[in-house]
Image (cartoon, rainbow, N blue to C red; front, side):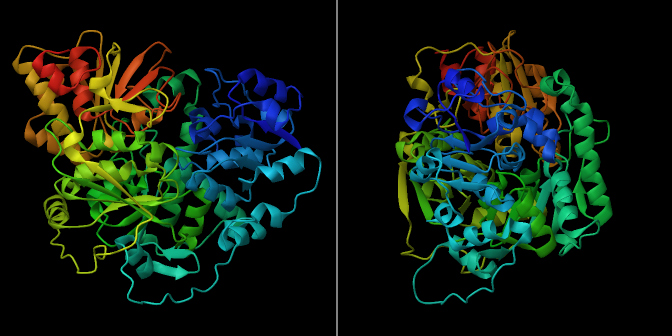
Length: 623
């Protein structure tokens, strides 16, 4: 079998594709943190069938280069891929393992895998392993059977792979869990109430967006014919949120992806119409949508104690309301659409205890950037786990700010994140939806519940943070950065930073600047993009839109936009520097330039200062 080591040295990658056979020792250091953005870059996402195989790993970077071209894996006869730690991190896009499978890859080896990527691979029938001894056997030409590849995997993953994938699999009846007296976490309580089969749970709500609808329809038709029967269609919510600004996306325009975007949109709308599903679509006028899927789910749908699945890695956003919400790929969503069930094992729960008071000018985004930079998290302590956020500092946060923490559970490597519902949750539901929700006594973790690990943070020690370009985990306190880069683009928006509380931060900075005769620096373009139309309308009610415009910001209707390289705010040249409030800054994620991650306040302050600066520094004249 032809093996391709995904090396940190681009010359060695090219040599292998040209026919050279390297050993593990010859390959040298392997690339860690290979993201799904690299395995199936944005340009490939307009495809949802075997055509994806042409694009496998065309976004892979090594030494600042992209050594894997179109059709390279297929033409090179590559059947085995080998990577380093945290393979498949980032987006839940099932396009990535499907691209590899369609290119002829049969096995992927890595030191560790991200949970969603590996689960998607299982569901498609793509084999994965962390046992490099098996790789050595393959290199020697020895046969390696299924049992060896499945050693150490859970019984459910093994059964799905033996069946040939999830859609060919029948879940086993669920063995009743003993109630017992053991104190358990809120996550465990919710899962017990939703357990439907061995390793599967019943979903209260399922949601899908246009990047995945066509692939789901394709998979369902291949398995069940042209008229699959959906389970409880009234609990399925659909969104067009990613591509409604594609006509203003530099990448989509430069690569002539308009026909592919139209194909995705048409497949989405056809599926919605065929099954009579609830749909939050594009706005009249051709720009923007009603809202980013997971942001709108939290605004209008999610309730404490529920279980929600969606086709986006940031589905945990809704965990801020005390529910279990997690992302799945296309095969898993296709299965959920026809059965109402979704695969979920028994992951460990990690507690993040944040006590004390956050200093003025410090927000949830600064806290999560700090968490991402912790050595334990960088080493993968959060991978495959559930994050429970608590402590006095978390209880003091608004639901919008809590959602920043649970949203970025995806970057922390976790399956999902949640915060115990409390009076703040009740307030949110009453003020945002007019719902008088009554919390039930069981909706909390029991005293003495067991956690796999507890990470403690003293809130008072925090300050504004940023993450250097390349990875959200490359964070540091902004005050520790002596040389401040000049900023070309400032972007505030996305699901992480397009909420009411985020816009309150943008407004505080820009109103302060205007009151002192200042506005966005002449060389900076500031984009502010609403997460939902509800947020947009609320800002209008506050009278803030004129302030934003007077300060020099360009306002954009709700959409994923520049965060997914799908709209204005993405860079167009490698030398451009962006400061962004989004959740990810993987190479190429928001254009070819360098992306620094920061809080909404720091983004707005940097736009005024013309270089990286916190609001506190701007006010005191330090920058």
